Length: 77
Image (cartoon, rainbow, N blue to C red; front, side, top):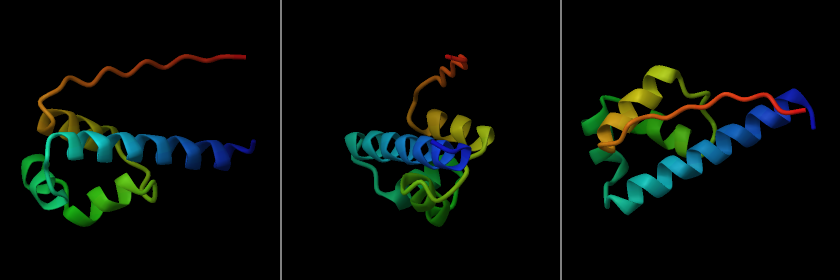
């Protein structure tokens, strides 16, 4: 798998997780936008894996979800 394919896959997985969390909290994209300060269009792009999400946006989303962000970076061979 190329580096670009890995990035695309990771963004799609992250986007699905954001969408699942939003839906589990019964929030529309517009409501999540208001709670997070991220535009509705950006949330749509994140959820569909079309946006390279920033760490700042991850923190804003986790705060809007009422959760802490736990990021673990590990290299595997």
